[in-house]
Length: 212
Image 1 (tube, helix red, strand yellow):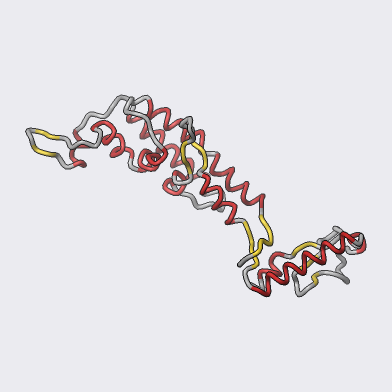
Image 2 (cartoon, rainbow, N blue to C red; image 1 turned 90 degrees about the horizontal axis):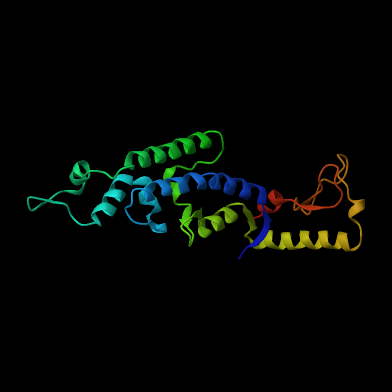
């Protein structure tokens, strides 16, 4: 059992915005791939297009059938080397490399630790074939930025803190509660606090988490 204490929407949106920044680049890669005329791409093929590009295009060209020379079946890696690539293939590789380099550069300036594999696994295609964030990834980001009371003590403390806040509003006591360096700081064993230059009480997330 658990109860939600707080949701850091700003942190959630910041990371989501970071991921969405690469959607136009991913769509450009798909557009370049489509110029190869090797068939359409599905959501579950995105990873191989971006990470195992040569093998992915080879399988599309051969429809995953073995390549035979003189009746002998070639090993896939050998066949990939000798089979002529479609026009525009080098442009596709360069575009994917540019996307990966941009990702590495952006990550070096943030606290996010995405790499090409984890980034592309964040995406899927919508019904029109456009890249979007997976619904499961969006839920993952939301959960990452939620704090919960998980112990019986923390859950009870959270309920009591919310009760006190609601009652202070109901009885119009909020304006009487103001942060003062010599007065109120934390209440209910740290579950409630008042912020500098603000009236009223707030849930102190860390104060409740200490009781989990």
